[in-house]
Image 1: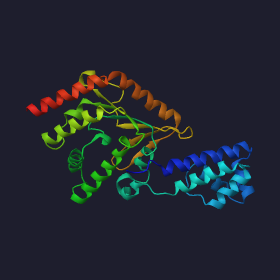
Image 2 (image 1 turned 180 degrees about the vertical axis):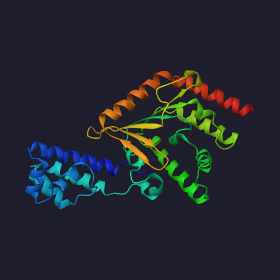
Image 3 (image 1 turned 90 degrees about the vertical axis):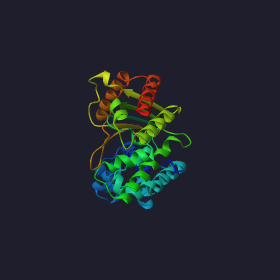
Image 4 (image 1 turned 45 degrees about the vertical axis):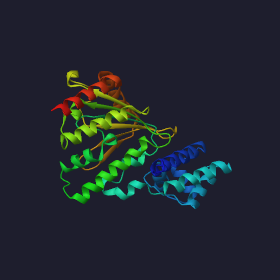
Amino acid sequence: MHEPQSPTLRFRRLAAQLKQGREKSKLTVSQAGKALGWTSSKISKIETGQTRRIVASDLDKMMDLYKIEDPAKRQALHALAKDAKKRGWWSSYREIFGDQALPDFEAEASVIRSFEGLVIPGLLQTPAYAEALFQGGRYTDAKDITHRVEARMARREILTRFNPVHLRIVMDEAALRRMIGSPSIMAEQLKHLLHMAKMPNVDVQVLPFSAGSHAALVAPFSILEFPEQLDLPIVHVGTVTDSVFFEQPKDVERYSATFGDIQGTALSTTQSARFIADVLTSLESD
């Protein structure tokens, strides 16, 4: 099982603490750069996470300038810098996840709230369902599809690891009705969905067609929250070619409000389980 560690979050945490150190020292970015003999751009790129690497000697210089003298604190910041250099398991699937990999953030998430309108959410898919899903796209090469299925299945480990993520899903009824693959593949998928819905860290709610218009008639999205106070929530929106991440508080708040609205409109988790079971029964009786 993969180690729940996000190099990107580790560096962001380091960057945030260095920025706090500079501000406590009452230094501007320009003043800090001048004192260190660096350009202000170098300081800025470190603090905003535009650079993902910082050598140990540079980190020591910044901590010296900001009067971060506590040995334990200095050691902790060096540990963050070291962790930020590690490669996550998803680096083997860079052509699938892109430069900003969703699993990078999922690795340390404590809560993930997701809305899906057309298909079963990726974290709850079976291998056969995922394979059938990819076969319906432009990726027709068998090896490529196998690679993509492996990547998607690897993501699921965050649900069953020690101290797993709490996954809260709201999905449209269309995701249950759309026939992906054969009836047997769909039946297996719905059974897996019901099995996962029984787990204490997984909540599944269905938005039935009868709900009519609702707040999330938009692209699927996920809101990721993290246990560390310095790691602010982010929103992930998948696109045809890449992933888009929204980090500004006002954007996160809008998506959080939308998710709250559709949670209120959706069936309860108990009602949803019955609804899924009914769809499964109908599928198996055809």
